[in-house]
Length: 637
Image (cartoon, rainbow, N blue to C red; front, side, top):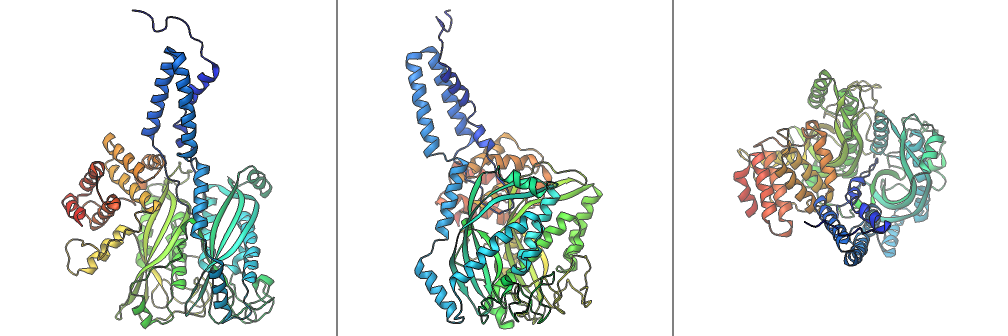
C-alpha cells in the first residue's frame, strides 16, 4: 500500500493559519454575550451549532484535499475563505451589526413627522399659552446628565423631585441589587445627542408627553468597592455605545408653565418659594407634593426605543370601573403597580417579606414569608440580579360592588434568577424573560386621590411618604396599611399562564377544565422576549426529571434556531439547575399547563402550518405536561 503522500508538500504559512482559524468558528457564538441593568431584547441568532459544525467539516475536507492536490485544493480553499468572509459580512451579522440593526429599529419606532409634533405643541398651548417645545426639551437636557451623575454616584436624592415614586423606586432597587452582586455601574463620556417630542396622550387626568432621547456613553461594571476615580478610569476603556430611550413625562391638565418658577430652578412649582429638597418631596411653605405631576412635568417612565409602542390597547372593564371612580386613570394605576413590583423584588432580594407589609395584603406577605423562611432553613437565599422592566400594561379591571374591585396588571420583566447559599456569591445565572400578572385590590367605592398624582408611595390617610421599616402601620398617623380599605394593594402575583387559566375558569362558572379565550392573542408570539420565555419554560419541562436526554436537547435546539434564540442562553439555563425552573414549570395536568400548551401551538402556527419537527416538539411537550389529549383540538382551532 502506497503512503498517503508520495512526496513532501510544504504549504504556505498563511494556509496553515487559515486552517487553524477555521477550527475557531464556533467560538464566535460562545463568546457573544451582553447584560446590564436595562431591559433589552436578546440578539437573534443567525445560525446555530449544527450549521457552524457543517462549515468546520467542509473546511476540514478542503484542507485535506489541499494537502493531497495542492494545485487544485489551494485555490479552492482561497475561494472558500473569500466566500465565507462575505457570508459573515453580509448574511451573518456580528454583535456590533446586530446592535446597529436594533438602533435602526429604535429610530423607526420613534420616528414622527414635524407636522405631528407641531399639532401636539398647539394642543398643549391651547390650555397653556406659555408652553414651548424648547422649554420642556431644555428640562430633559438638564435632567439627563443629572440622572446619569446620580446613578454613577449611587445617590438619587438630587434627582428625586423630578421622578415619580415608582421611577425612583426602580432606580433605588436596581442600585441595591447591583450592590448585592458586588458591583457598581461605571459610566463616562456621557453625551446627549438629541431630544425630540414623539408623542402626546391627553386625558381628563393627565397629559403624557413622550420624548425620544438619543445619547451615547461608555458603560461597564466594576467592583462595588471601586472609588469614583477607579470607576471612571475603567469606564473610559469601555467602547462608546449609542442608545435610544423614550422618556414619558406627565402633568395634570390645568397646570401651566411658570417660566423660572419650577423645581429645575430650585423653586416650588406651586407657590414659587425656594425648594430645598428632602425625602418627602413636599414644599415646606404650601405643602405641595412637587413630584406629583399636578404642577409640572414629572418623569414617570423610561423605556428602550426598540420596545416603544405608540398605540395603547383598550382595557377591558375600564368604563365600568370609571362609573364607580371617575378619576381612575391608567397612568396612576400603572405607576402604583410598578411601585409594588419593585417592592416585591426588593423584599425577595433582601429575604425580608415585611418590606411588603405596607403595600400588600397579609395573605401575600405571609405566603412570601413562608417561601423565604423555608429557604433560610435550607441555608439558601433567592438571587435576583440585573432586574429590569420592559412593560407595565393594565389587562383588565373587575368591579365588585359587594367587595373589592380588582385590577390585573401585566408586568414583563427580565432578571438573572436563581438560588445561592446564604453566604456565598451565586454562580453564573442566565437572564430569563418573565411575564407575570399582578392583581391589585381596592374596596369598592374608594376614589382615586387626584391630589397626590404620581406620588403613589404615600399613606392614603395622611399623605406622608411610606417608610421601609417593615411596620404595617403608617409611621406618622398610625393608619393600618396593607389593606384594600383606602388604596390599591397587592393581592396576588402569578405567572401569566396561571393567571390566564384562572381567568378562563371565571369566564365559564362551574367549568371543570379550562376553555379557550374568546379570541387568541397572537401579537406576543412574534416578540422575541415572549419566544425566549416560552423556550425557557420548555427547557424547564424537559429538565423536570433531573436530566435532559439527547432527543429533548435536539428538539430544544431546533426551537431555539427557528425562534431566533441564542442556544448558549438555553444551555446556561439548563446548567443553572432545578431552582431556576421551579418558578417556570407549569404543574402537570394543571389548567396553566393547558394554557402554556395553547401558547406553544400559536407559536408553531404563526406561519400557518405545523411541520414534522414542530409536531414532534409539541407532542413531546404535551406528554410531559399531561395534556396530550387536548393537543389535536388546539391544532384544529
